[in-house]
Length: 404
Image (cartoon, rainbow, N blue to C red):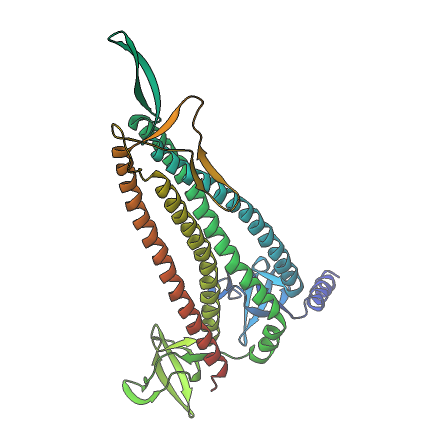
């Protein structure tokens, strides 16, 4: 009776464990021998055939490239769960990007305010207010003008020190969010690609599940093929060969060409699927960097306009008295609807200390040169990325056209 129960349990377990196709879901899955010895690491995204182990429901019997192994179930997901997980991941990525973009928008506004504030603070070291004090001279009352600097050098340095701390904190947060958004952009493209290719991946798996070879794409011209240590022929860039990892030599492959088996160095060939993924990843990364550069260039161009505006307002008039030049309200356009202004207080007049103004303008000139160079560098990088994208697109087209 005991033997019958055991037989029935094994029988039911085998019936319920008919082979199914699952995907490696962890970073990798370790495939073991029946005795528990680790034999192979299979990377995430790989499809394998499985059935539940008759003696342990927490494990699978895995069929991979014609061989049977044992593995933990937790390393795999059924395809319907994979599809659901991908869709949920896309929603999470959209939510994270939306949250990041909102904060980036706020940071951009804060940095603009801080930038304007830095211009105002430096400008204020060259601005003074004129007041009059009366003195009696030979029985007559004489009014003598006096000037009070709006912002002393020591106070300016103290305020700018605090300003730099706040700006560095915002820039650090901005860089972190941009880096995170770049990862989101790449991850979303990868997940969408995987979701879209599920059917074709399953079809390819059905065709290749017993194959131990892979498709190798030739990425350089005149790659030598060896038999033992002798070069027997050369192959051209763009060819696709059937091959597998060399069992004895690292970074070498065994490939078949015209019915013969050759050795080829891995420096001239790549796994076709991996190369396709590489090109897609580089395309996605370059596209995202172009978006960030466009925003950065726009910000720098805007700041250059601010420099131009405030410089014109701070240039001294030809008419000076005691080193001061009278100015009116100081107005600089921030954008189409915003300005910042120095208002002249009641019964006072605003004056420009000509010597101090020259020092401020000299500092701004250096800052404009640096900002202009950064803008030019960003534009140069933009051009490089656009050219690289053309190369990636051509490489992808060549890969599609390549045939064995």
